[in-house]
Length: 191
Length: 295
Image 1 (tube, chains in turn yellow, brown):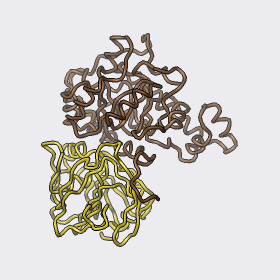
Image 2 (image 1 turned 90 degrees about the vertical axis):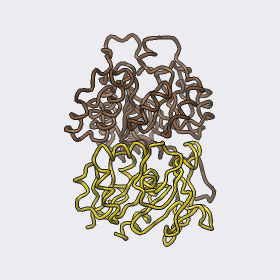
Image 3 (image 1 turned 135 degrees about the vertical axis):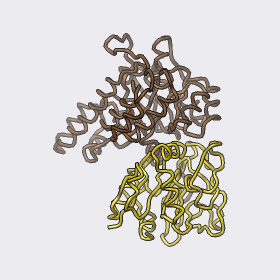
């Protein structure tokens, strides 16, 4: 059985765990560097990116994860997890860092505060329609040419909400909050 | 599924509470404190004019904060900003929603505006958190539209005893429902003074339909580790941070303890040399019990 980690410092870890368990994946909650052993990929959950970034440092996970990601380790980031993967963060804290591995620019809370949070069906390449839940979501404002847009709010693909570049997957919304596990399954199948 | 974007759905409102899990929500009274909270790894701040221990000391009527201070805090931090409305004071809640706060706390810490009715929270796009001392109270608030439940504890005392009582009570009552036969749930719903469908849902799931956080009297990293092990999914810290000797260190230490609550070596490390926690009150000697507010 494939072992997949869920970064478990803060956020909706439980929903990601449940989603992976439903796919018969062995799930490891990652809180310390030694938890990274023997996992084939990792999910960065939704939560508060500033809090998770803070805890990545204090837990000693930042450097080993950064090294793994540079070596091509598969990561799927949702919402805050996408922010942590992105090359550029707009409207973040002045000192906000990220792993910088996924070549997209994201705007924190780019869709507005909680009152503007929304759900909407989107069409995902190779999967079909999914209900996408956006919560104080980051907006992908720019994606490099080599980044594949798997889902977009516009038909012409100019407003990406799910992207992939090789082993790195980033999603503005929260597939883990629904009962539809197809996006998680696609990530797991890629491992 | 409708094809146009839908705001204010139950999934979207409860979803933000899911994102706050494993985190610390800190009471702050000005932008400087809000900045310290965010720097320390808070997942949200609660903007209010006086922390509960000062409300307790000053007496008088405690109301919603001045919009100016809420806006100043919103302009300072990137994390969610919550604010408190009085129990039943839907006009204060309307103002908070108009200010774009991310969560409204219908709070017993403020002086209640209605001695019978809580706010109809379904009428709002912004989600609400409400306090509860037991399962019946939690389910009544959820029936009114609350998307997040917190223990009440006894705010402003720096004493965690009431929060522990509330968490234990809620969990015991949930376990009781889980062991009940389906035909007993009608009478249990009556005893809990809670709607039957919610009682049935809790009996089935073994937990509340919304996240359960802890508030009231958390003052040390050990307090956070305690309530998380008792089943709270995140913590609100009110007076405990900015009434301590070294708020910056205390804030960071409570954040670490909340993440690593099962690892006593981490909690021990962050608890070392923190300086004095807030002084605190023995709850048996209190004249005003905030937890008794709410119906």
